[in-house]
Image 1 (cartoon, rainbow, N blue to C red):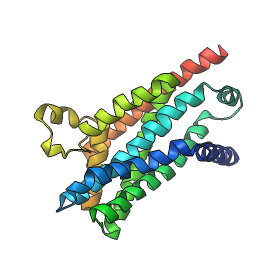
Image 2 (tube, rainbow, N blue to C red):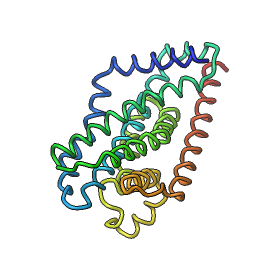
Image 3 (cartoon, rainbow, N blue to C red):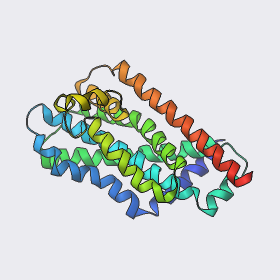
Length: 244
């Protein structure tokens, strides 16, 4: 099992590193977006919260774009068809993808933190930084699983537009661009049920040094289970289509 996991990790890392046009923008774009918009909120207590919000935005971007798109594209390649015909647990490959994604997530979040320091002048303490990194690593798992669910359910051609259609509204609804207190009442009523709001609340609690909010942990767990169920159904459908 360990040798299988090691091989899948190496494979996932090599596939990703051979596509710099894909992973480099994924890592740099959240920091660039923070520099354009988030840095303007750097004054006062709002600055550290904006930094945490864009860190979560980076996490969700990795999940939806690195996995929502790549899973859909990989599924249609002959290599993946051959890979599915091999013996071995399918979950090992997904576990390897999640581990590689966490590395990319930490790199993207690190770029946001650097932009906060150099452009926004927001310098969180060591404890705040460590808690934020742990929170981002935690929420990266459901984010990646939701991306895998999306990539498993749609075609390669539909993956990019659907990723945008889901990712951008979820970032707004979750309060990652605008503080939740400033959202219109109708939007705020929806916001509290979105996975991005749950991720944001976990990151903001980490910055404050508060306990992670149980309500939003439960909400995120529900979204995670839904993503796992959707992935399982979609993968079963693909196996039936490929092997009968």
